[in-house]
Amino acid sequence: MPSMTGWITSALVFAALASGAAAQEKSLVVGAVVSQTGSHAAAAADYRKGLVLWADEINAGGGLLGRPVDLQLRDDASEAARAGVAYAELIAGGAQVLIGPYGSAATLTGSAEAERLRRVMLNAAGPSVQVHKRAPRYVFQTAPSYAAYAEGIVALARDAHAQSIYLVARDDAGSRETGEAALALARKLGFERAQLDIYSAGTVDFLPQLYKAMAMHADAWVAFGEARDGGDMVKTLKRQGYEPKLLYVRNSADPKFVQRVGQDAELILGSKEYDARFPTPGNESFVKAFSAKYSATPGPLAAAAYAAGTVLVEGVRRAGTAEGAKLRAVLATIEVETVLGRYRVDPANGAQLGMQPAVTQRVKGREQPVWPERLAGERKLLPFPSWAAREIIK
Image (cartoon, rainbow, N blue to C red; front, side, top):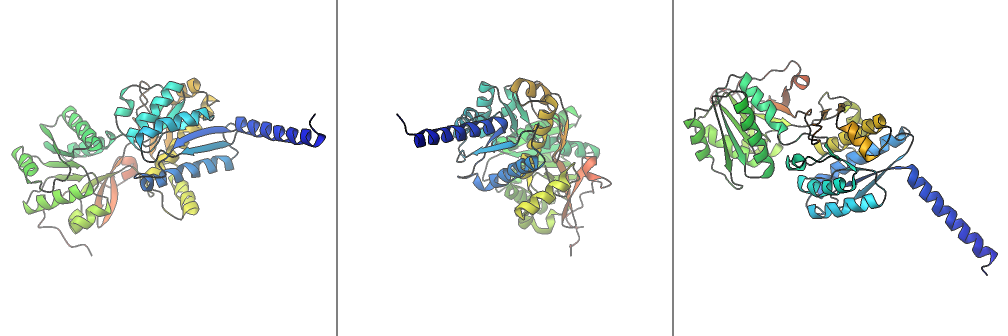
């Protein structure tokens, strides 16, 4: 027979295990896969910080539905194929709601597990249209898609009375998707001439593209690609004296672009999905809290993670539960203001419809939003000056 001491020890161990299980059951377990090692680790670091800050704030405020949030993170080592396995492990470990991984490929893999096991996943960092093309029932996009970057610039080109628009995109998934969306929108808005050309990675001479733009008398040049590509384009356009009504380079706000072209970046348009200075709902307090916790200014990925948490909180509160079917029914129809803008999705596939990346214009060395109006305020699009008429900025 076991000794009295052994019996007491066993009872204590059992009690501790039972207490731990009860605490685990009481918590609302939120699972996320974040690249913490591998090639994506540096980029995804801000994403993780945004999630941790969100969970800390919710728990400091008493939790969600009276339950503390237990944020559980897994590392996919920057390999998309491992994301699905990691999410399956999270669900097996009790995760009731999921927040998507960094990158569209990983999101595709992870969302398949969410669908299979009927867990709601908030897609915060998978911008490709491919994620929602299959019309998932449990996956909801909480950040702008690639296609969203087309809306503002095509609208501004129309407002600037451009008659023809030349679109050029790098041969990568994101740039292609954005370019194709811009072409479709330009045709829908009635541009007399609209053309999209795809260039290969490593292209440094954009003279062939310029000749095509000139042949169609394009008065709007719109480019989707990397900052380096945009810099080489601008150099080519300046050498050839091409002066459109509107010149847009997707990543013109990137310091690498500015370093490449110097003051020729002035009055060129670009896009930003997020800026710490944007007057979006809750952004001021988010920036303050993030800066206090991490001694740094939050970037787009931190904001994307935090916005996903904001949507999750509102969805769970309205549904009164984190149970998959009830929560998904709420997330398909609600609208929520976040630091990235308004969450509103297509109920048929969960794709984001409400968030609009800002179109910015560099004025006196500083990027400022000129679209949409809620971010631009009184600022208006300034005309693109001739290369010869440009003044040196001091």
